[in-house]
Image (cartoon, rainbow, N blue to C red; front, side, top):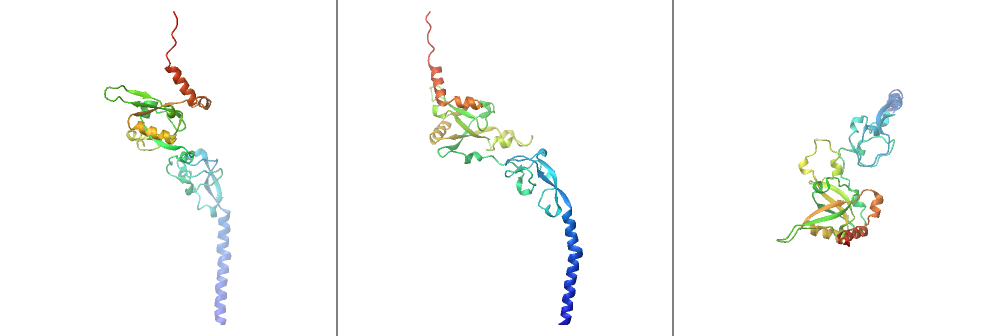
Length: 252
């Protein structure tokens, strides 16, 4: 028994010496050392590309540095997965390589409205300037049937419609395409040609009917908020009726 106790005492003594003269000094040394890691200098919304002006280097304790990104090159050009707040340290889980399509509008639809996509020649009709948030009047071209005449119309219930998104032939949002570096876009399959609209059931049924028998185009209203408020559907209808009335004849 005595021999066993002596062995145990020696073992415990060795452990104490190891902790006192190796582990504790190394821990103290590590706890006083600092490492440069990447830190965000401002609040950044989700799905935003990180630039050099948004980040800096900050010193942190070496013990806590393993999970943080230490080189700006590993952050610049990436996109934020979620909202990032000022003074947050950069970690891989907060970043992604490519921008996600912004489809947040799908969560903002009213209970009685829906997102409905319409194909059209945006580049040819609106010069490629149509973008999400625009207010448009739908213009429909109906080709003649046999010996009839071609017809163009803008139905009253298809006026004052909000554009939710503009997409290319391959269904990529033009907002995402703008972030792509020059030379990475194939123009053949990336021409704006799909418009996602915020519409009611009556409107999307009518749009579906017209796009299968004719061509749909858009007239874009002013982006000035004050003008948009004043330019109601009723005002537009009144203006159209006045424009279609024959001019009064003057007495000579």
